[in-house]
Length: 72
Image (tube, rainbow, N blue to C red; front, side):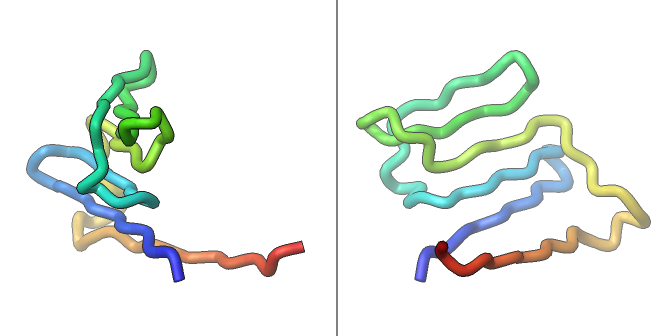
């Protein structure tokens, strides 16, 4: 099963999502929308980081919902 990592850094105000292996990161590229794309050596996007992220609500944490749809 593939693993997705979601990391919320409250102090740094970032939300990072990895769907590839972070150890293979070779390139980081910031977009105009303050999103950083992490890529492997082949240029495939393996994760992204949203800058200036603050979770809505009372600051009690981040809730993540996973929805898995069967393959067609």
